[in-house]
Image (cartoon, rainbow, N blue to C red; front, top):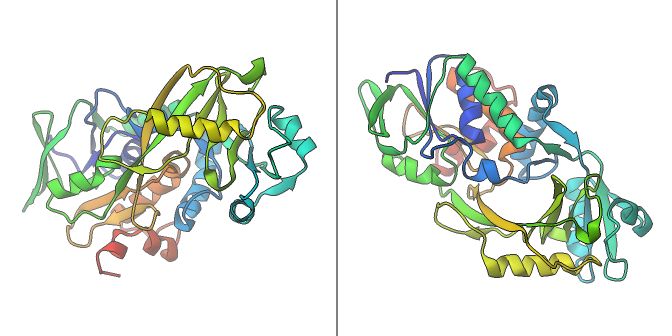
Length: 360
């Protein structure tokens, strides 16, 4: 199939890119799995916290807020950071970077009544954090892409990717597709896609993050609790559908794969969580893991590869994919269309793949 743009990857990066590019020309999206959002996008804790992440990613997250608000996918949540003995420096850094307000233990207990005052030395609150309805967000972008004429192909793993005088040829799912522009939105597989194309990998590293689903601790109604986490993000807990999701918040480098939780890492994370609360963990209902993919400087990578005309990167989301996707995909479209980027020249340089290629 011939198109103007081929997008590789059907997570939030790929579907948002397809939606934006559909206004510029014909789009084919290729997803290796049988369903969109199968990997990281479907396993995300999905919180909008504008100050979280690398500085350039933060700017794209802020640029995403209007779309997220207007799409109706945000719900108030808030979050707490709690610190124990010896975590004073990490706690102070969280207050500074995340722009948090210190609160008393009494205020914290009103929000999360299971916190243990005997083992907590400091608490701070962020009022503006909001839940993101990840499924509704994915479906909104899918509808926009299809309304613009995009063709979405699942069970279409890329088998070959090369360039000739006519542009890029991608063989996927036994079919050939051609386009002058390819967008590499393959998440944990982004460097593998680059290698297939003969493009130098950028050093995108997938890192596992595990999650356990717990029954509501002590029978509490957790629906109005904020997300809460240990200082320095040593663990986090987030209400979800009447349950509590608890993560060790690990970032263990792994090869790209269909991730699963590491039992030992999960147990260690649950122990860190238990050290801050009065209700022990008695049962894990289920567990899973996802892959957060980081560039070498932990910021997003968006733009044309300087060594491969027509090969664009949209990668390195590093766990901020949901909250930054609306702004990141718009920036990608600006780059592809040759428009002046809405985020400005400084952010454009900060996320450009050229920063890893010795080209500026």
